[in-house]
Length: 262
Image (tube, rainbow, N blue to C red; front, side):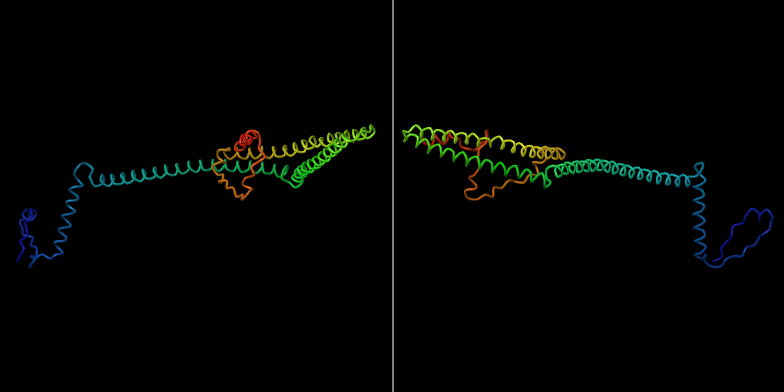
């Protein structure tokens, strides 16, 4: 069908009829799309013209500001996380420095022990001192027993003889044996000196071991790592717990043994 066009005022002013070709048939889909886009543009321009400055740019600015604020917040949160991690690393470094210092101090103590007490010369000296104590004690004991036996024999013979000369001879023999007993008892002085040397060495080792234990937290901290003591002795060895020291518990005294026979 023919489309009737609207007359504009300019046409009426000129008094003429500016003819336009009439379009026969239906308006095509392209025309509808063009008109729809024009209406959309007109609506967008109308929205942009109102509100004094336009809401379109304001909305875009608000979106940008929100995005910026969100990114700043995320950056601050990440920065706080990094700061916390740095603090933990600093604490870890302090602990590692303490461990490093403890290890160095322990190495120094071990070096002192090795150089002073655990080297071959010093340990050989300790073993020699203890061996001399055992040998001296054994020799003195043997000498005392022999002298006591000789005195016993001389005393028995003295009771049987009547000759003054024989009595004098036996008496002199008894005196000589008594003197030999006194001489044999001198082993106690030498034995005490040797044992004091060994005790000095052991005390030196004990002091440095105590220092190393203090480095790692003291005796209480070390006790937590001490393995259980298991008695692996068998037979009669499990019954050998002496000799008893003064103040030791778990040993029978002579009074306890005498009480069994009362």
